[in-house]
Length: 363
Image (cartoon, rainbow, N blue to C red; front, side, top):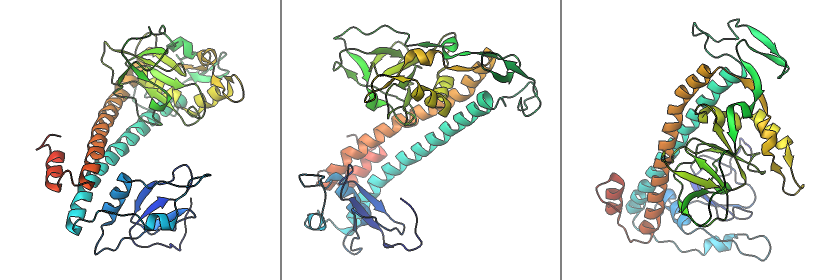
């Protein structure tokens, strides 16, 4: 919420959200901090209880709020909780196994965030600031590249570029609706990440209609707050011959003459595009949706095909790394979530867990 020069808690501690939509959420904090109202702080006795072990124990047995109105957790509620208490060394080993998995997941998140930022930076330099590499490898506009006025866009763009709309580069909702009753990969609005890309998608029959998509398509959320939060998804891990289906609350973009997944994903996540999409929503005030027809006519400079191809070649490896990291994180999270209750309940020993994590033992 903010910063202070006067921390109230200076020891390592675990906090529990005592009220609100995240009631029961636990976090471990090892830097000095000042807990705000409705945040309970648990400072473990270092001689008997490891702070990371306490965190994972409470994460496994998340405290529930009580009350007929807004659920809340009181100090007596949390004080009366029981906790299994193996030796301190065993606690530390247990926490180390679980925290090592979380550390790997966090590292992959950071790598993905950096790769996504790099892709956005290149996109902005090339297609917003027009400083793509010229024939000499220098930034085009900054090096005095010729700019010409475009009547369609009512602005100057690089010589050799055109003025047009998204429909000139992409097919909008290009596929027919699915046949009901067949097994297919299916995604809903909850599947779209705020950053990164959709990877593995489970088979499902639990749907009654939707839009087809294929590998490399860009999916755009049609409703708020998903759109406001930047929720667009790029499908990157379907097999080449596999087709999936998504909620009708998506708009599907697919490159017309060539793959444009990297360009499309950056375009769809740009501030100017999201602002335009939100301004052109249709429907009732309670449930407005982005109009696909308005997306078709969203105006933008049309780069030469050779420049688009070059952008895709440069940025696509970033997407591949992000996809692989996302897949690895799914597996690491599954392993962590499987080990967490097993370790806390004593069904798996620390040694057995270490062997599973190292690959010496299968689950």
